[in-house]
Image (cartoon, rainbow, N blue to C red; front, side, top):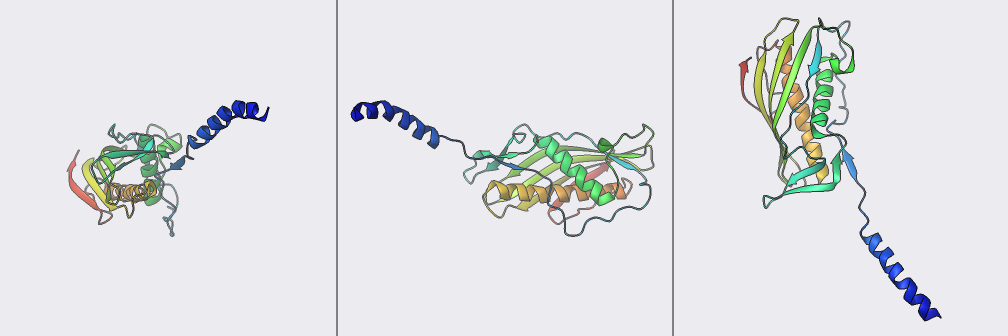
Length: 216
């Protein structure tokens, strides 16, 4: 009798054990919003002289994946299915740039308010050419960006910036931390162009290489 019961239960127990082995590991979610700096940006007193409009960001299709993508030493690109962005990558980049520009400049993004069509606005457009991370190597954020004044004085400026920062490790979290810093540096460089009224841009960090700017 016991032997018969064992024959019945054995397949069930084996299936349960296999299902346990095949269970997916927990998923970790990451964002490009960097932790708050120790010293927050100074708030602007009174009515800000302009608003920001950070347009949707374009990202290369090979980088626009829900998983964290990392280049391996042999050249292969690995997708870490248990390590993912909290939102589509173009939204992550736009949100992080907007957040840091708002902090740097002390103004508001029109995406968060209802602004009249006559409002003075600096429009920001970013096209990401490369968003890459190499395990044990560097993270690269290569972007062409444009700032343009709307309903206020200034001139348009078109620039290309390449930000390169070391990962300091081989884990997906290392890649995220490096790209967070790269996004902060890119936003600060864009902010410098807005402060100058579109006359020029300055590298906000030694990791930022300005590849040239032109009036647009």
